[in-house]
Amino acid sequence: MRLSVPGPRSLAGQLFAMQAVLIAVVVAGYALFAYLGDRGQAEDAAGRQARSVALSIADSPFVSEAVGTPDPTARLQPYAVRVMRDTDVDFVTIMSPRGIRWTHPEPQQIGRPFQGHIERAQRGETFTETYTGTLGPSVRAVTPVRDDGRVVGLVSAGIKVEEISKRVQDQLTALLGVAVGALVLGAVGTYVINARLRRHTHGMNADELSRMHDYHQAALHAVREGLLMLDWQYRVALINDGGRELLGVGGDVVGTPVADLGLPAQLTGALLASEPRVDEVHLTAERVLVVNTSPVSGGERRGTVVTLRDVTELQSLMGELDSERGFTQALRSQAHEAANRLHTVVSLIELGRAEEAVDFATAELELAQALTDQVVAAVGEPVLAALLLGKTAQANERGVELVVSQDSRLDDGLLPPSLPARDLVTILGNLIDNAVDAAQGRVPSRVTVAAYTDTAGAGAGAELVLRVSDTGAGVDPAHAGLLFQRGFSTKPAGPGGRGLGLALVHQAVHRHGGTLTVTEADEGGARFEARLPLDAAGPGAAAPAPVGGPGVGGAV
Image (cartoon, rainbow, N blue to C red; front, side, top):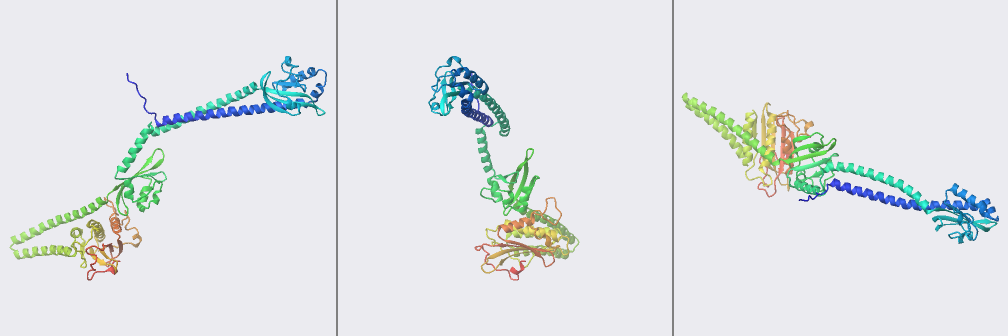
């Protein structure tokens, strides 16, 4: 036969037991205190009542007159019985100055000595004491009866302790009834509260809750994605290590309002929004984040859960992939055109026009080679050269002429390790895409790209200058302050949305400590210029600006 060992009591059950015991102890203690206090008060009240009755009898002229008669008992006994009945005392004893009783509730005790202390009354004092006499323990008062200043008798009035206890017991019974009612109400309230607590804790005990907390903390630190929990007042209730890293916040931020975290305005607005946000792309100073928000509600708004995913590297790779895809599409288009030209050459030969065929083929080869030679001669850095060749072909497909300015020069090996080619692809590629969009359909449709190093001044070091100009409509001065914000665009939104390219450019330039400006181009369009500082130890740090280049004064 197996004995089942009861499992640990749930946290709600433990709290219920503790609260029930606590209420019982408090009520019992209060009852005991009240009983002792009421008993003491009852004895004091009985003493005051006996003293008042004794003094009233001693001051009565009837008593003074009766004690002087030959038989005081005959007149005083009926009087004493009447006073006991009217004043609710247990005995009234009138006696001689030597303590011989003239009256008593038990007539057989008349004529016998009074049991108790009378010395102070014989000296003219009135006092109260508790003494055990013929009727049992009683609280009694003894006072003298005076006639012309002489003590001619003594009066004692008293209430039995048994009667006092009966009064206290009646009060105690009522008190215990109230205490039991309070205990029942407390137990019911405790049960209701703990039933609610049991629902919230799912009946788990303290050990289970402790283990769940440990797992919870371990999971938060193990998850690399950012997790942020906000309370109903949009203050940080919880943030994991990934969230701190992605948002760039340090220290104890729990309890801090979202608006005080120093995040970009658009990201702060997304976190403060009441509606859910799904896979929104937001930029911080150094990262591209995908943000999802979901309100926590259970009949009322309780807060918001925010997840953050870092797609900075993915965004850079996507930029490079877009450039490669554009280059590939341009090569495919050129291959198609080359096939057309080849058919033309073959047809000319078949027609016996060999000389015209050679001239046609040579002209096409010279044009393609001239474009490649121009780009490679100006930009020796292979990644940027490939980007420019691809963007040139892509722009031609859209009817836009992309020109690399003659003052451009960026030799291979010039860029320091702190300025990776990937970031340059992000900056230059997005600026070119923006310029091609602006110039498309204009007359002329031209985009001019310049890339060179420039000495910014004595002791200031060298800068890499990337400038892109177009023949578009230019930039409205009213939009200048919004141009580099995520989501802002003057063009209709496409399938993938707009307004991210220039924001990525601004982020990359800012990350490398550079500057990004936009002014009016010579041909009326917009001119974007990014200046990136080069390390002093970089291979091209000391290289002067090219002859004929715009220099510092031409930057803005």
